[in-house]
Image (cartoon, rainbow over all chains, first blue to last red; front, side, top):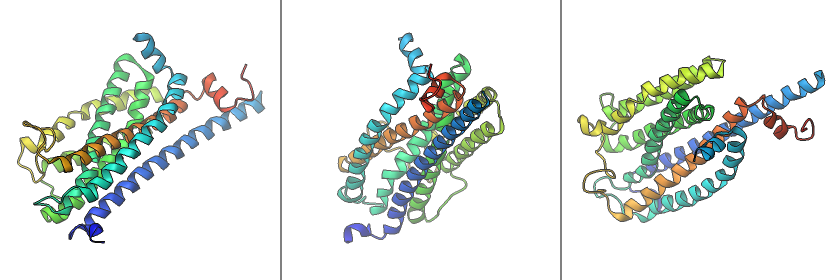
Length: 53
Length: 250
């Protein structure tokens, strides 16, 4: 347990690492969401075009 | 050489190739980050001045490094796109911006968390390193807002490229700020005359984290650029064949 206490700095050290994980996860998720949005928009347009033809 | 560059810059080829590289980047990134995190948090000795608070550098330094690397990639790509009218280069610049903003935020936040116990303050307005890094965050925001405000992709590419290039003057200012002005922020530890001023048990995890986060950034950037390429090529035949393979693939 002492290993995780980080002297008196546990709150600072662990919040930094937690924040890093949060930023990487959000950055990845938002990237994927955008990819999905772009793909969906293209598919929708292609489908409308095909029903028009 | 030129054939290779042209092939790489061809959107369908890039789209396919990037997908192959992303998992490899991610695997090596996670392995390095896993080692760096364990070694940095538990194996490296505590700093004789900063105690265990110094362990924040294992996330702060990679974040700060990537914040500047992302801007450099953005500005250079924007410049290449502007001069040679290479669309893929503009896509790289556009993909790098949100990631750069995230890592700049992370560098500022982790630096702030470190500053509270070490300097006794979360933020110091007069400090040149802190201020120039904050300016970079606003440059990223400005770049993204400008792109979002212009519907025409070609015009958005050009206008935002000019902003990225003008803002690039901030990069050497951030880097040399701790040498040019007196600053609360400590001076360079790794890239300095006489080699790194840090002992190996602390240094190796840091190098692993910098390399690991760079690879992770590489994977995230490739993914973002793929999305950009897909959007830009939305009317191209290869995109149609890719997304609707059953129909019209003649």
